[in-house]
Image (cartoon, rainbow, N blue to C red):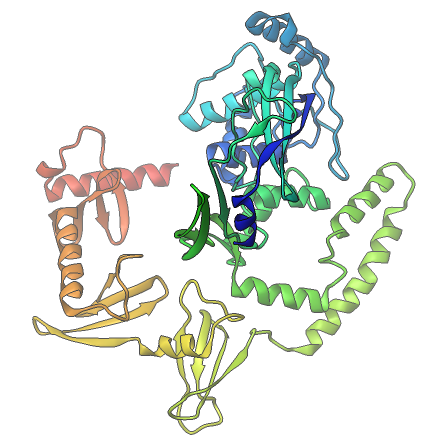
Length: 544
């Protein structure tokens, strides 16, 4: 506010003008890690998906080997790239380069990832294969193109009554070079810098003030990892190799150590002060903070395992362990180190650590005492149970049996509060009766549900809150599910059913699914037809 008051009576003029010519160089051809990162940013592919699609392209002979940390291109590829660039864009766009790998401990046994035939900008296959191939082609061609020529302009604006200056920055592309084909993405999610077209000005030129805006800002925490940024970090630390990035990230998700999730964020009010026409006005604006998309969130089991490993195997989980072992392997390959000595030096203390850890016989549960129940005085705690994180009221020392409730998906052992834990015991709760059966709402392994006549009906995520669900809404959920199930059943022969599935009609017998032959009219099937189809399927399976 004080600064805006100062601006009221200030005169503004152009202080200095700095024009700097510059260049922007293309990124090197893809390695495994950079391909995984860029496919995530530009195409939305997971790391595992990128490698699966790249594997298909490689097997079809469309790209070179996709597990590499080399940025080198063969002489043939360099010559072909130059030929393609000159043919498509002209001689001035060509600049042959050979890049050097910067990643720690790189083993350049293979060429960089590039199209097998650089004169083919597109390929055949499914949409994902076409998209990834095009990305690889553009990156390879761009790496052999001329630098982009840019002109950066920086103008300072002086105030007559203050040493504070305003700064205006602009950038003009004089020659697009490689930018004509490809621009590398970044992990930066928010770019608040606004770009303006700067008009011609001279030093000392007076400027008229239209408005001055002051916007409230908050310090943001470091962003969570995406699969792409985690791969980048692994490469920087020298952890793993091109062939292990995707399996590593898949494993920690499959084991439940981390989960990839979206978070909606929370709304908050920010204050904006605007000086215009000699008056300062205050307005409030709502912004969403903490919104996350496809980010990796640590889970309770992952934190517990990590704490256990850090406590007992600190040398093994050290960031530099993998890189050091790889260096020793290199020395062994060169004949500078005896492999038996290397293994002996590692294994003897490691075996001792394992033995000592097993003798402790202490199972880590990540348990925390949150406080006491406000009505009964019983202790309330959380810990990792057999089927996941649970809250507990009471303990085994009491005569009454402890009560348990599972934590919800977004709750963690380390951060849950006493009030949040007590809320979990409000479920399951009875809503009343409907058509001779009790309606009970609760939360299970697969999320919130309504139980009715021994059947379970899932609540819609983001729509239904189990704590405030009404009888009317519960009945609506049940009827919707029953209607959907009726539409699913085409024919019912008791022990054999003809069902309508995601990919069309199919048969079910003894919990086993059977495909229908192409051209079969599911509506006209008899039980005898179904038996015949099942028998043919069984024979085919046995013979194969």
